[in-house]
Length: 86
Image (spheres, rainbow, N blue to C red):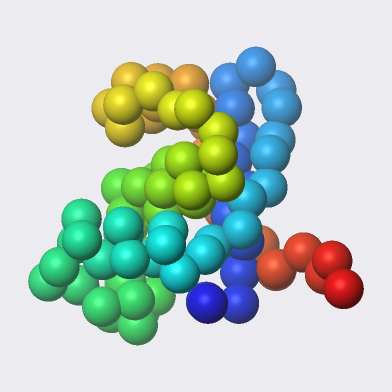
């Protein structure tokens, strides 16, 4: 939807990339109802980006810890160009 995937860098040194789906974006919007995606892009902050990574992981079928516990397992979350699977 946003033309990007998210890459999650874990403290164990691994990195995983996840698709940002409409479901992940809707979960993000439910968490941040007063912030549009374009507003966030203009003034990026860490927590909404981390939540998008968590949501995308969960949407991909990965079993994730509750958000605040999951935060302690990661080093970074980055937007990356969407993987070209086609």
